[in-house]
Image 1 (cartoon, rainbow, N blue to C red):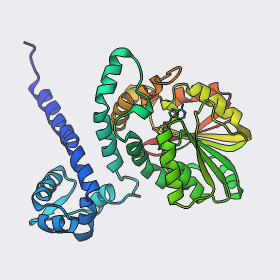
Image 2 (image 1 turned 180 degrees about the vertical axis):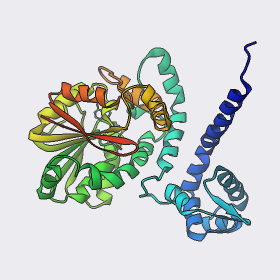
Image 3 (image 1 turned 90 degrees about the horizontal axis):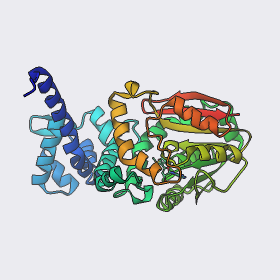
Image 4 (image 1 turned 45 degrees about the vertical axis):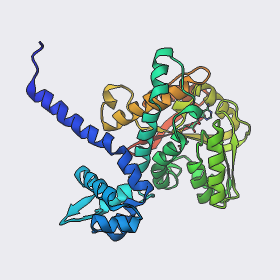
Length: 350
Ligand SMILES: C[S@@+](CC[C@H](N)C(=O)[O-])C[C@H]1O[C@@H](n2cnc3c(N)ncnc32)[C@H](O)[C@@H]1O
């Protein structure tokens, strides 16, 4: 038998125990979110398990076990028989607009597990799994996953980083948000720039219905949503076209790039927000790369392979490859205008 290095083995098993702690926490974190347990803890902590259970309208025995698991995970603070959230724990689990609210990531993890059977069989056939056929509400999970990043950076940092775009948006521009999903980004921009007109396009009917409901809930009149594919959506003469975390999901992102160029006015701008990644696997062997490659295997690559051409760029395509795709559409200038720990913002013009 091969000689095992005991130290290396122990390090690996210890690390996997930590990882499994996160994986086992997925349903617990989602229960805590759905049943308002984190919000209750934030409101009344430090509190006993019984007090938390009563305030949240839940059964004490379950809440006690849940709190014990959360304390052991370090997601909840425990001291002298009472549970509470530290400000940092509240920032991650109980504040929807915090830049590091990570509940959407746990929702996405659950959807990825639900997607296993379809993706696993696609490994054998080479076929895709269409966005509309993904497990559970993958779309809701993804919208929630990206929302904190957009809420905290899109209007504050990303749009101002583009050359001359903010001034146009303030005075009144026409904007298309292509691959808009549930329209989180579209609605944020429409709220910030009331003189501009926004149209969100996505090829997934369910997402467009959710986006319309989202805009109506905010009472916005300068935003509309239409079902449309990135490679041939209606509409032209846009000052700005945006693509948030979706170019790499498209089957034919080069056809999308060509169509987007044609749909822009002379002097218009394409803003491409993509996951932050280096150009090589070596550069992406890190915690963020690990998350994105996993999500890409279960969501992004199957989504692209389910479409015509099926280029399957993957979520970690990197700036060099993305720039080639963007340039193939006729854009002559591509630059990284901004970045956050999870996203890069590319500005494309010609
Ligand atoms: C990861 S989601 C991102 C959604 C949204 N932009 C966001 O950031 O929350 C990718 C989106 O791309 C859309 N999509 C993929 N391929 C598309 C295509 N060829 N045309 C239009 N939309 C597409 C999917 O329906 C999905 O809504």
